[in-house]
Image (cartoon, rainbow, N blue to C red; front, side):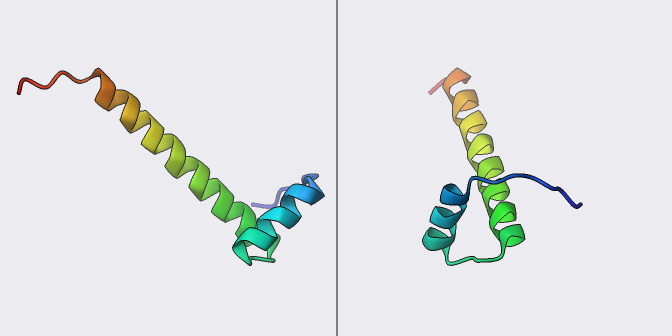
Length: 55
């Protein structure tokens, strides 16, 4: 999927320096994967806090 977007140059440069990934497409894909993983973990932690264990 092609997306045209204006990116924050400072944030992009920071991400390139932190990851060593200079390809913008790879960098954005990595960021999206990490966002999804973090949200899924957060959802699991919230769910775990709602469970009652009969131990």
